[in-house]
Amino acid sequence: MLEGVRIRRRVRAGLAQLVFVAVGLGAGLVVPRIAWGPRVSSAQVIDTLLAIGLGLLGAVAVIFSLLFLVVQWVATTFTPRLMLFRDDPIIWRAFGFALGIAVFCVTSALAIGKQPEVSAAVPLLAMLLVLVQIALLRTLQLRAFTAIQLAPALGAIAARGRKAFDAMYSGRSSPARSPLPPPHMSVGWQHPPMVLQQVEVDRLIDAATAANVVIVVRHSPGATLHHSSRVADIYGGTLPEARVLQGLIVGKERTFDQDPLLAVRLLADIALRALSPAVNDPATAVQALDELGDLLASAAATRLDPLRLTDHNGVERLIVVLPEWEEFIRTGVDDIACAVNSPMVVTGLQDMLRRVRDRADPDRTELIDRRLTWLDDRVAQRNLP
Image 1 (tube, rainbow, N blue to C red):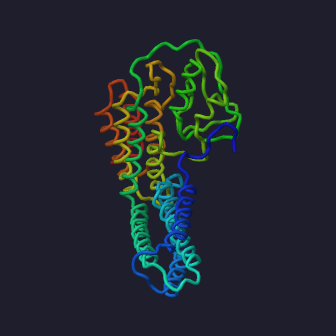
Image 2: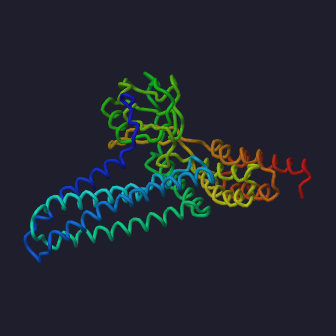
């Protein structure tokens, strides 16, 4: 654990599972004590509860087997950086719910003990929980089936990318640009390389307001923080480095939460894998270009300024550097343009760039025209029709 830095995300899957287990334990101790309502033989109820509790261990094995299968499939078919299914809350909720039911059944069986009769609410509740678990498993299987299909996977990536893009470029950014006070200090990264996953804007704004300073985060979410690199600058005063680092959530891999370039990177990776000699699937690459072009067109038509946030008094307190237009087009186009050998993909890439150009601001068409000219020259050199 790096001191003063948040590595894990706010919501932890382990905490949710612990809650399910705790609720199952509490219900297992309380429900058998119900004295009202119809009564049933304890021996039959105990046998049923133990059978359900032990049988749910198989459901836990199915959940993990499905997780490993889908993650492996996605990593080898699409890209190893695509972890939408692994991070889907339904997986850990289904797993935690199964553990909770198992704990409830075993605890209830032990709590009944040698009682001759027990309330019918115990087996009824157990059966109801099993039905809910079956519904969760069905939902999980449908999500897994969707995750290994090309079109839904591309659509999910693009949807998450649009959400992150809107959050960072069309969120709470202040339109006014007030001049920054004089710089006073810089905050460096003195740890092993980590990916900046999120910037906790509220925490940093509160820290900057208390110290009457402006914090400028020099890396956008999704960038890798290297040892001795400059993470942030403090303007107008001083602020302990730990206060700044506590507002950064880092990890080993990129996440969609605040990373506007991740979806572009993933779609480009899928297209590149489809163009590799081992796969040679140009139709998949063209399908990825359809979603990629929509994201690039949105970026080309949007004002890509840094994220500027103010405190409750309207004073600018936090600036987060974000990717500019050149980074979007370099990430989404250049690698594919260099790897393309198929006339189908060349045509698809040209059409995508023309669609992006039609929606782009006039000052961004130059970079698009350069790539269109480069593609035209490459086609002419290879005598492609």
